[in-house]
Length: 494
Image (cartoon, rainbow, N blue to C red; front, side, top):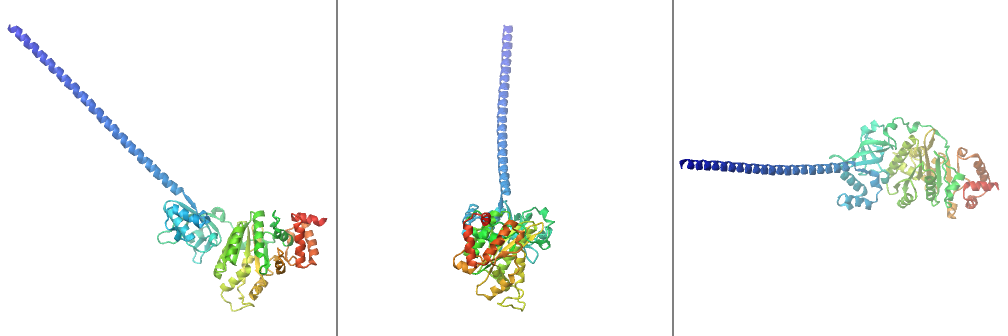
């Protein structure tokens, strides 16, 4: 009995041990499962956090890329000053409002351009500008612009003396380059980098010769004025009576209401059509504002003016800027034509500006007053192996002023071509009102071929016995029946 009981106790103890071990195994398994679950949860949390970090990094990188691209676009954005100046005031105000500039109606055009440039530069943009250099007595200079008739304004560009010395810049040079905004104590934009001088790279400017050292010769190359316009008989008549060449110094002698303004417009129109290589400038001195507007709308070229309500110093400053600009272009072997209206009023302006010498000529003209306008008119010349400067100027007569007569007499022998207008023809409404017998060109054999030249001489012999009215009526009748001057010369054979 005792043995049986001990066996039962032993078996029970074994069962209890087995159950305990199984329970322990279950506990271990459960703990392992929990550990696995915890590790999986932690891994998922880690992966989620890592994904969030990577996503944030990508977003930040995208934002930084966007910002850098935005800054790059701003820095690459270039505003060309000439394009702003070509806009109308209405378009310019709308452009300024789009940029966020307020109260645009209170600005003048030049002030509005200044505000637009300052806004664009402050936002990282670049500004490229071109202008004509005017060097002041203090050594520094400013770039002036033709749309403001080379007068001073808030949008002028400052040029430092070091830049002027480095590139050997002269008054009248056309300078192009990058511009920086004014600093705290500055009023004007400043030229940061010179990129172009007179349409050429800066490296090509070192070897240019001064205008005064160039060799002048007689005009050799003709400026053809004849066009397909059958109504423009003025150009055809001038080509026959008084041909114009590159480098000509031509004087149009005109009484009041003789059609000189229309004649200048016809000449400018013919030059722009037949001679696109010529740089054309129309310089209007002491003229009426409505005539300036009419000339700007009818001429394809640069038109600058100083109207009668401006002081004499302004007339002189504008004229000298235009002449110096033309000289710089001629130094670079360019062909330039200046239509000056009028040299009489320019001489009046110089008479008021020049200090009195104590010697007064007839009509109140100072003895030294005409020296500078003669220098302006005398700048016209044809350069040997180079460019040319042609000046076609009008001189006023029969105005009732003794001063105008004295000025005309002083300039009478300085030109090498003259076109005389007759008041009698204009009163009879015969245009162009050219006195054929008194008009002509010196050394015209250098411009006209022998065949047409011999026929021009025959024509002059026929017309010489006629009055100015009969001669012009005869010539107009012949020209209306022929399309070109060649047809007219061929008809002379028959």
